[in-house]
Image 1 (cartoon, rainbow, N blue to C red):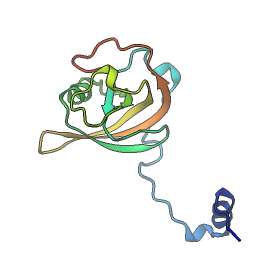
Image 2: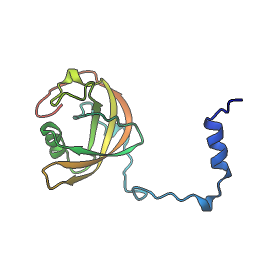
Image 3: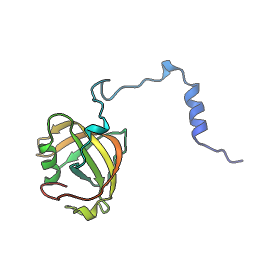
Image 4: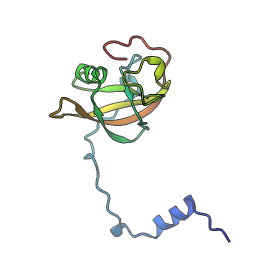
Amino acid sequence: MKKKFGLSILNQQMDDTNDSEVNFIPILAEGEVPEVKKADIPDVLPIMALRNTVLFPGVLMPITVGREKSLNLIASLPPKKKIIGVLSQVDARIEDPSSGDLFKVGTIAQVIKVLELPDGNSSVILQGLSRFRVDQFVSEEPYF
């Protein structure tokens, strides 16, 4: 007889735990991430290409930024409401992707924190907000 493992078993296990047994540690304090409304998202987004990574809506993710285009993008963001588009590369082996090397569906993300690293790279904490589809690329320099 095969056992079926799925969502119902997971839900049952979660229901069986007492609240005192489960501890959640928030990554960010409540209220630290401002609410972003649809009106705050511009029609033209700066795009960051990710290699071997997919950012999903609702997820917080640290990204190491080392490419010149991505560093230029991060440096050019305004101090408030740092909204970007994030697209994954089709082929991770390409060092300097063009617009044709990126998937056309990605995630609108908010830059939560930028950390400058001693090696000249930066680490960026992104929060995925919602999916988007690229209509067209306006330019590829100094970034997408």
